Amino acid sequence: MPWKMCKALAGAGALALLLASGSAMAQQKLTIATVNNADMIIMQRLSKDFEKESGIALDWVVLEENVLRQRVTTDIATNGGQFDVLTIGTYEVPIWGAQDWLLPIDGLPADYDLDDVLKPVRDGLSHDGKLYALPFYAESSMTFYRKDLFEKAGLTMPEQPTYDQIKEFAAKLHDPSHEIYGMCLRGKPGWGENMAFVGPLVNTYGGRWFDESWNPTIDTPAWKEAITFYVDLLKNYGPPGAPSNGHNENRALFASGKCAMWIDATSAAGYLYNPKDSTVSDKVAFAQAPIAKSPKGNHWLWSWALAVPKSTKSPDAAKKFIAWATSKAYIEKVAKSDGWTVVPPGTRSSTYANAEYQKAAPFASFVLKAIETADPNDATVEKVPYTGVQFVGIPEFQAIGTEVGQQIAAALAGSETIDAALKASQDAADRAVTQGGYK
Image 1: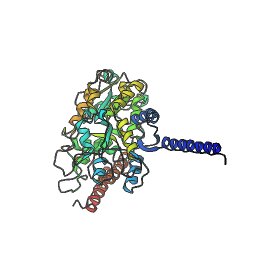
Image 2 (image 1 turned 90 degrees about the vertical axis):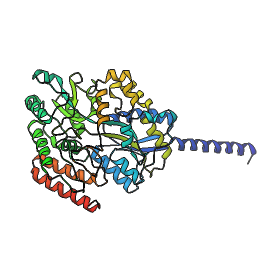
Image 3 (image 1 turned 120 degrees about the vertical axis):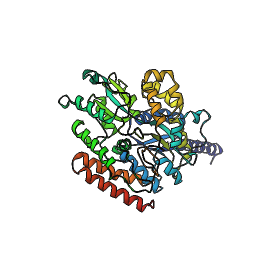
Image 4 (image 1 turned 180 degrees about the vertical axis):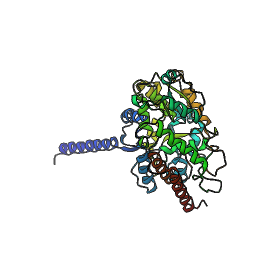
């Protein structure tokens, strides 16, 4: 073969190899499991910028909250390696960090400014002083209400309402003939759905999940009083189909003008105040989460965070993405594309110190205070052996909370009595902690 032809072929081969190598690099892909909340939908849309900047392709698996939890729990417990980035929360992170299922967060870019992340949120995503996830947004709970309906009815929402007052307001504002319902609340079963509301409700009624010896305390007067109140409130003044409504369904109902009041996550405030998303953006107002017999544990603390499982085959790329998605620069990117009202809340001091955010988000200082005052270590009237406001920080709680959530939903739907639901919940919790060796 002539030398020139050999040289040409060699050059062509080298070029093909180079192109193949470049193509392989461009095809590095991360599979991200996340929840179908509004903030995550924005993240998915804006992440095209990350793909362009990094050359890393992103494959999104966006799931309803209960399904997400099942999928990621199964995957990580079996070392399945299906996902490179997990959207999990302050319940899972410390437990999975202790199990050595997550990679610790280290090697962050110099401009990430970890100290800017609110301390309660960092602490909730740590185990033994090690951080195992970065917060995408964080939240507590609050009361949203229609100020126009309150004014029309001659009602005044106190800064700190009681549940008795809430029930009185709901009765006066309930107008189903005009598709306005006195109260919207989570009814969809799940430890992170209806039980995220029910847990704090039980706390403020003086109840708890377990006593100091890990005996379940669900079949008790405090729980019965709290659940009876909850069921009566939604049956009399809630929207149709309340047992099927979770956070997203209630948010849509409120944003479309169909709820006079809604007690739920502070993270919904940006959505409800955004005229692009909410027909009542100029009519919504807020107050603290209600109390009953005690102020303890009446508002929760939660963060949806991004973590990297040990089973990932692309740890560096995964860490690069979660740092990008939780950075100051990302918050500014959201502000530029969608407005300051809807930037991911609850994570950074710099967000709450930003004059533009304060101007756009009248709820900013209120939300910050709610997050900073929620105390997972002191959320009940009587002492308990666990941490957590709206959950119990043990691995077994996911199953316990799901089972109890199904029983409470059945009581709300009328297919089971409250007494029967609490008895079945008590038995399920007792079996779980007995089998887990807590007793």
